[in-house]
Length: 141
Image (cartoon, rainbow, N blue to C red):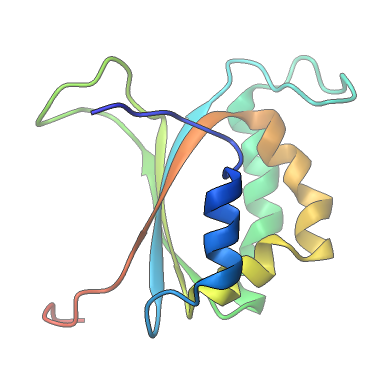
């Protein structure tokens, strides 16, 4: 299995988000985050800030945007142990975010308000995987 952390989706992934409404109903995004040791702002600012600190600024700004677009944070926490399987390197943090639809995620991530905070995300992340899932209706809520 080849795994490639990225900070931005590729052209095909963007086109799918634009043209495919996705599953009916809510989606949950599984975010596997890998932080830079030091933040890398395009303008060279904040050279002593860690990637985790830069991403925390993004997190504080994106939380109200998620809510504004009908979503909610389900969970966020550090990766502490790989209990099963093998990986050359682990992600640093996992976050689960629910959105009412794929379109609501796309609307949020292309909004002007999001663009104003996304530089913190870009500066803080070495890469990530975002995995779209749908809630299992068989599980009790």
